[in-house]
Image (tube, rainbow, N blue to C red; front, side, top):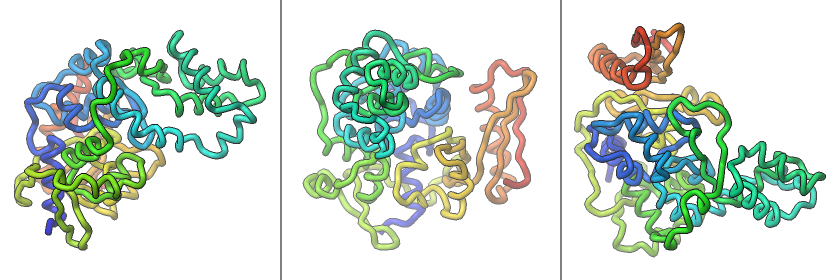
Amino acid sequence: MLTRRDLNRALLARQLLLERSPLGPLEAIERLVGLPAQAPNPPYVGLWTRLREFQVEDLSGLLTSRAAVRTPLMRATPHLVSARDAMDIRPFLQVVQERSLSDPLRERLRGADPGQVVEAGRALVEQRPYTVKELGAALAAQWPEADPAALGAAARAGVALVQVPPHGLWGAVGQPAYTSAEHWLGAGDGPRMSLDDLVVRYFAAFGPATVRDVQAWSGLGGLREVVERLGDRLVDYRSEDGSELLDVPDAPLPHPDTPAPGRYLADFDATLSAYDDSTRIMDDRDRRDVFAVPGVVPGTVLVDGFVRAIWTIDRKKGAATLVVRPLFQIPTRDVQELTEEGERLLAFAAPDATRRDVRFNSRW
């Protein structure tokens, strides 16, 4: 039987949050099965939090060299993944992309055949990169009765799209422009993994976890059958409430009293969205504050391995202030540790600031 703290320390170890890792950024991205990338900067902060030596240029170089890409994957949301994972994982999640095209959007296609829209969209983005809005407007020239937004959404769901630089580079602004993964990365040599392999990689990065957890992370349903056929590739435990927890053999399971340093997690960090039940890292009472705005997951602060605050960086007249908004009273010793870590974060995220400060608000 594994306690909540057992699961917490396992998660921190798998996610490189107990101590910074010597891994290179590309290896870390694959170890973590990608990082959420709904905005340009969070993956940079996510890697900085986890790796011993990481600079902005390390990830920018991976994106411009096409070794890594930003593409809609798990839950149909943008993720930063290696180029080979982009090609290998997308086919298993195609059904998730198609499900993201809601019934109201389908109705607004007004007779346009989705398959034809997808092929026309592919042809366009392989001529030059398009934003989704631009793509919808271009497709409307062929289907003038359809809603351009629906046309763009249909193409986005059907074509494996990747964002092209400069979007995704540190500090980028504006809407991302897309081309097809095949056009950007090449056809490749065919898939190097199965759906079974992807599920095993989830447990290696986030386990021990339930079948409902891996389904919540991926957006896929019906994974019980996959888990059952994995057999000896997985081991099982029980949670405090009796739920079955699955894991890969010999994966790290640190002692629950293992010290956990203060950490600043990036916006949209996967540790908060990788579970159906995220109580291993966040109290239920705090979810309302963390997920207060639909579609937005702010940067969070770990104290003793659990979410205890929300952070933002305010920029004004050349100054950068890291504002920490506690969700409960943070002990003085942890405030000191987080102040020092916050100063390092500001040096990374705002190197051009003429003044840098870390400020703790008295209440959220």
